[in-house]
Length: 358
Ligand SMILES: Nc1ncnc2c1ncn2[C@@H]1O[C@H](COP(=O)(O)OP(=O)(O)OP(=O)(O)O)[C@@H](O)[C@H]1O
Ligand SMILES: [Mg+2]
Image (cartoon, rainbow, N blue to C red; front, side, top):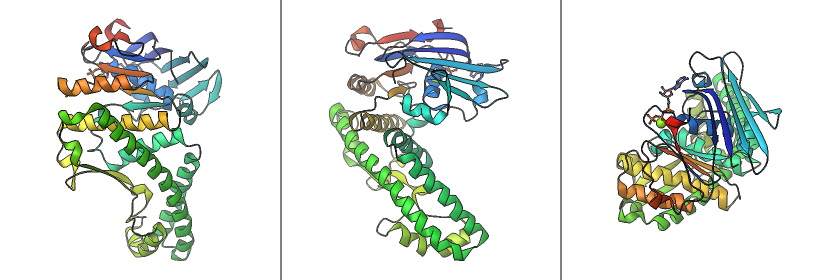
């Protein structure tokens, strides 16, 4: 994408708002509760049909209203996307006036969201990092979705067999699951390797070591979800008794993770909050850069509340980062902390005072 215009109706704190976005850098500022996150959230909905903040879409409907309605325009492609959610019906998505499924949105309006949960990326449960990685691969690789669904379907089947103690069936399912698991892992490992390369490229570019010293000692590893000295099939067979006892498949790609180690200790035990935030944003940006450079996909970068918990030195690193990302960027901050001296190098910079939008 670039969304060039969005229209928001009965969404969160807003009645009706129309915003013309820049294909370059968009900055929303305003005090607590003014609606910054809500605007970024609406852009994410165009990309996924989901919120990055709430699992329940009903909470997004403005209080005392029956539905929210969002409309977005992509000026360069001439696309119109509409999303409607009423209290009593499932979400309705249409693209160019034709009903479509939410999974189509991520392909047409890809975006990389960076927000409160992403800020503690290293601290989050493994599932969060897996999802973040998978989300980018869904955008990048056509064949990933079917590989992902095949694996998780087979996993469900194998777990069903374990629950019902149908041992005679298990060997056939081990084979199927290991084949699909290896395929899924290949996709993840490839994307992880590319991300790691981009990550160090960004680290070099920003030279954060003048600010943080930990980058030199950081060791980032992809964990497949099982002991990789052995094949997944061997692991499944070795673990049958344990799995039967636990009545679930204990090892495999559904346990895969990205590990961040500092002197062999989990980085979350060590990094300060600001360090975690900086590191997490950089990792998400690295995934974003892989989409751009390797797959030629220009996703919109969304960063909510960019400045909180960062001191001026770290904030300056981000300004360099924003200068480097050439896609559409939509980000927010409580204060208007971007003087014209800073933004002169930004690509087509547009600033919005959120309180004046409603
Ligand atoms: N469904 C809803 N109906 C009405 N108001 C809502 C709804 N959901 C959230 N709000 C309110 O919308 C306002 C804007 O919330 P939002 O999270 O976008 O603010 P923000 O500008 O990001 O604030 P902060 O700087 O604290 O992060 C808040 O006052 C919130 O309570
Ligand atoms: Mg907010």
